[in-house]
Image (cartoon, rainbow, N blue to C red; front, side, top):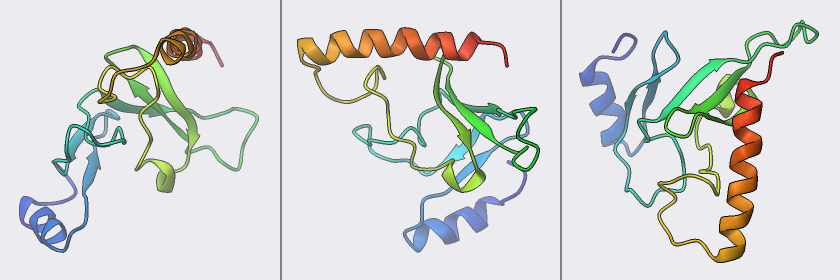
Length: 123
């Protein structure tokens, strides 16, 4: 961990705040432990952030995209730093924490294929 010391993190967590730290490679360095039934990707070790800069969008060059390394798919794109927390788990997430209906499974398969294509698509 680079920016926050363990002592600083403990102080934040004692106040009831969740802490996440993204490393220089865009991977999750630390996250406050949440329940496995969390509806957010923040505490998952499969979450990674990558640059999502758009060459035509000169005034928002710092955008990031959230990637699920387990499924090799893009979860969300064009994220500003303030949007990089509380990213909801997609329906296709294997750690969604509940059983899907047949309709949800079919929809999840379609969405996963789309999000995997988005991951591989050139800018």
